[in-house]
Amino acid sequence: MSAKEIIRNNPFILVFISLILFLIISSFLNMMLLSIVFTLTLLTGIYATFEGKPRLNFGLVAGVLAIFMTWGISFESVDLVLNVVRFIFFFTFVSYVCHRIMRKVIFSPVIDFNIIAGAVSVYILMALLFSFIFSLLHIIDPNSFRFPETHESSIDFVYFSYVTITTLGYGEITPASPIARSLAMVLALIGQLYLTILVAILVSKFKGWKELQRETEDEDSSSKKEE
Image (cartoon, rainbow, N blue to C red):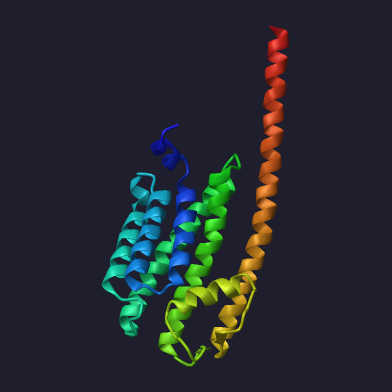
């Protein structure tokens, strides 16, 4: 199998790899490098959800607009209007990618590394969605969160989201306003429910796939004996 075929058959693995790379790079707070890797993540999202059908071109348009907003507005911008516009584009596209990937995961007849990577990618993307919400909330109300004295950056909300969704909670960044606390609780609850439901779906689909394989093998054996 050629590299092109591997990429074509495993788009969700590309999304997963780009997301992990983005999380690693976000720790270094290099805005140029972060923008490049985030653009790569958006491109893999477009590739993974685009099937060349006119009715699915919404994902392409939303993805291109999200990329434009990545380079058009700094991650450190505090302008409310610009951040609201960027939030709308990012949230719309990432929500669309989550929806398309989950449909593939739920309705896929087989369980392979690509499907598993897709399911995990949705989990990572959900936390990324909430990081957009937390960042926008902080711009609207700077007292929504308490930060360490050493640093305060919009990228910190990426870290806060993943610490929250995993219910790790180190405590460096804490929600201070009622709405911030409510959103943090919702994210933690969604994270736990998603993992529970995801495991149930994957286990049931794996069992069904194995049973189908056994039935197919039994039919083949019966056909050979009759011959």
